[in-house]
Length: 264
Image (tube, rainbow, N blue to C red):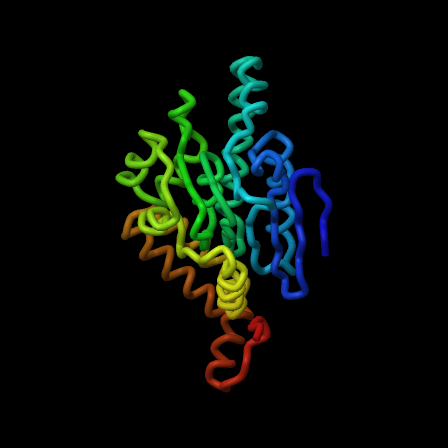
């Protein structure tokens, strides 16, 4: 199934694997108001679609995402402060929507990613980057700040690596991106699709409801103290034992049968 947009492509296969492709190749898939709005709309639809089990995020052409479109930046300078805050917030809301997507979000990083592109990598659950890709948090070179993306980038690569990369804006390669945790793994450009398919296959072995609950569990545990988490996690496991997936999963293990959600 294909959904038509102006700046992104959205396709879903028979397994429930949706691929969202940033589709402004002439602008290196740079973010503008239209792309942000369309990607947010797609994320809402994917989150609500029970048939979708996995989402892949990638770019068309040579780049993954070159960050913010300079024409979009320029148009925002001319607006009132309230309008600039509103425009800035649209990116923050998009990143939040992607970060909390109740499905695995796999980043297929086909090429360079700068600024906001690094932010979108940071909200993915698993990222595979082409070995010739380049990365950079380049905002300070423009006299700007990596503001909206910072909560996700800092959570992804930590404070030390954030300072190393954000304060100079210097570019870095895929080897360093993997070392600091931005990328989960690196693949040769010609082997990128095979690597993505391997990760997709692994995720298709997991129960969709349990995946969504586990993603929410991770976010909650990361934001609370141990005492609170002990109470919360005890409740969540007790709840899981009562779900249809939990009952089916336990029974299939005991019976040595295959649960209904598992795809070969």
